[in-house]
Each structure stands twice: as structure tokens, then as C-alpha cells.
Amino acid sequence: MTLSSFETLEGECFHQFGVAPRKADCRGSGIKITWLRNLKERIQLTNENSMQRYVKCHIMLLLGTILFGDKSGASVHWKFLPLLRDFHSISNFSWGSACLAHLYRYGISVYHT
Image (cartoon, rainbow, N blue to C red; front, side):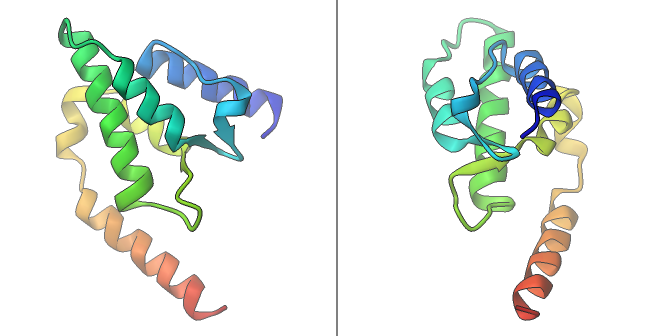
């Protein structure tokens, strides 16, 4: 990960979660699942903002482990972070179509190897 892409990741995480990961909390172009789990456990649900951060962490964990997981299962690509910017629109996304497209793409790459 280059410095500029790490700075972008830091900024996006800070915007979404109010805290940014260290370089050690990242793996390639992803955020380590352990960092997201630890962050989720530390969030105190005291107001709507903290509840949204908690839900965003949970969604990122779902994206990285269940819906769009990679072979390692150790990180979630940070390209998903911008999808969480408009919290109230998240439920309107076509997650099923995205999962199917990901499955086809991953399945084709596995088939050709």
C-alpha cells in the first residue's frame, strides 16, 4: 500500500468510524478483520452516531467475511468504505446482485486456474 492510498484509507476510516487504523492494522489494500472486530467491541452505544458506527463496523465485517471474502479471510478491502457514507441509503443497494457478480467473477477466475 502506498503512502497516498494509506492516507486515503485513514481519512475514510476516520470519516466512517471516528478513528483510523495504523499501518499495522492493514494488510495490502484491506483493513484487518481483527481491527474491525476490536473497534466494534469498543464502541459504546450511547447515541445515534455511535450506533451508526457500530452498524458500519458490522456491515464491513459482513462484507469481508461472508459476502465478499477473500482466500485469507483476514482482511476486508477498503474499497467498500465509501458505500457506507450515506448511512440511510445502505439498505437501498442491490446487495444480492453485487454478491452474484462477485461470485461469477471469483468462480470464473478459479475455473481458469
